[in-house]
Length: 109
Image (cartoon, rainbow, N blue to C red; front, side):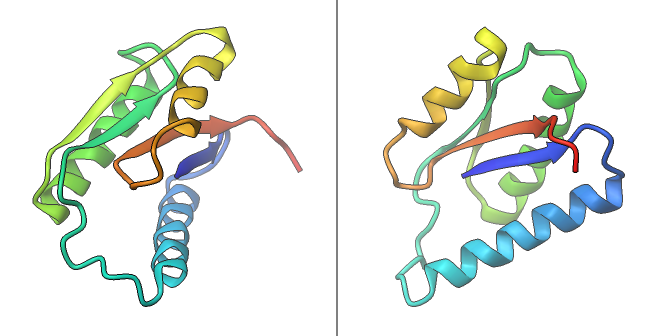
């Protein structure tokens, strides 16, 4: 799962994007037996250096997910190559839902 947030987005827009993403994931899961998810540690991959705004947001998000799921969420900063290193790591992860990528989008409409 890749979580993208527009650079100029308000907190309300960010929260609603996360909420709609979570609802979409639940709908796509449909009849899947997810009663024991997550059954192992979740890695939240942040393709930016630690200490910045993206890192702080990911850590707050990780704390909330950890409290809600009762499972440890680790924030893994993988900066470099214009976010390619961290994003590629998340894209090549096994499709078991234990690795997520948290990055912002610079696209403007």
